[in-house]
Length: 325
Image (cartoon, rainbow, N blue to C red; front, top):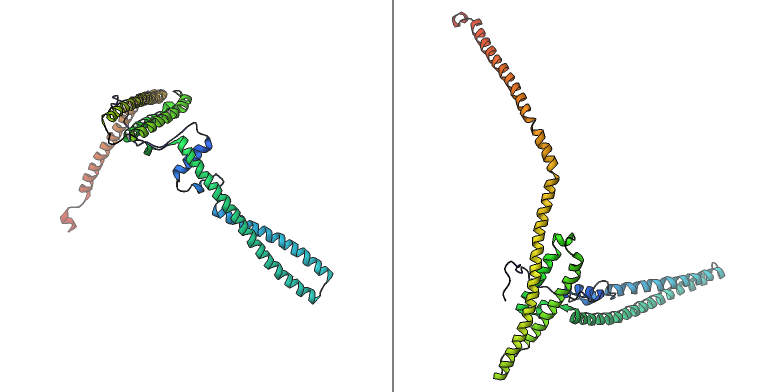
């Protein structure tokens, strides 16, 4: 399939496409399942009670029942103490009553916890089943995976997706220098239409008989392939148009960057002129420094002469070697 010169070549493989018009909940479900397709029952924010949730609710139920039972037991024991203060028999009866209460509490708590866990377990299984059914229904209606396409169709989808990504990530799009709202509304729709056409084409192409049984079948098969090829040529033209648009956006980005740099350089023009004006004082500074250097040279020469004179005077002042001997 020929490509126009200058159009971008796909550097990445095709990715799955989700229908932009699908309900938001379905799109969230599909995106989450893409990240973790083997754990639909653990999809976040969908309300499925987990094993930890069931245990937590069972524990809360047991604790609540225990607190209520203890309150009732405390009230009854308080009343008994008021009626039989200080009686040993009453104390013994109260002790056995507490033991019975604890045993009853344990049995009640275990029963309630088990019942709560069982109810949540059944509810979770029902929810997971419905969630899985929702996922597969949404997947059939609003999701197209690259694996559903032939190699040729995957390449076309990848080219279209790369062109769309190039536009959406461009500076001119993000800064609204081109029609940002239209891009965000139209380009996902084009991508979905491309994916659906390519999926249908792939299914029809894969359904062809591998070994035609007779000349009539061969003739029909050739006509069918010509029709399919015509549909694929239409997709190719749309992809080529997307790539041409992306190429123009890339050029607009390059010009925008050039304009931005020119603006930055122009903004610094006054500072450059000021710096240039300040450098005109360099000549005076150089003359001043050279004068100072000349003075230092005269002083250095005078000091050199003085040092030489001092050396000669010191030699004259010293006694001859014989005298020192």
